[in-house]
Amino acid sequence: MAQTRPDGDRGLYGISVAAELVGMGPQNLRLYESRGLLDPQRTEGGTRRYSADDVDRLRRIGVLLDAGLNLAGIGMVLDLEQENARLRDEQEEQPWPATSMPTRTTPSRKPTGSSRKNPQNPK
Image (cartoon, rainbow, N blue to C red; front, side, top):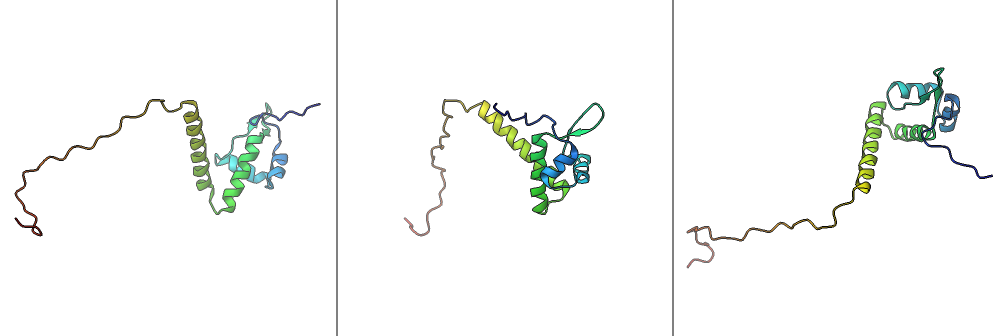
């Protein structure tokens, strides 16, 4: 029987399992959620459910914390990484046009009518 990989955004793990998977305490996961770094799904009863994508994000948060960033800086980095990924996806969807862009021509040099003579080569 083939084992299928769950959807990356499907909430599968409870807070204690997710915390154990990433080597953090459950209170840290609650803190990251309160700071807007994470948004786990919720059951009808309000229980947090973390997805594989959430676990990957938690690991990234751990790496950034180890690098010395504070939570505000981590939020900025994660936002920029997400925006970068979105722009890359957008670029792949809309390839550049096949026609080449017109090249810029340099203006021809016209005499300026200056009466200054080169002092090194007087005539």
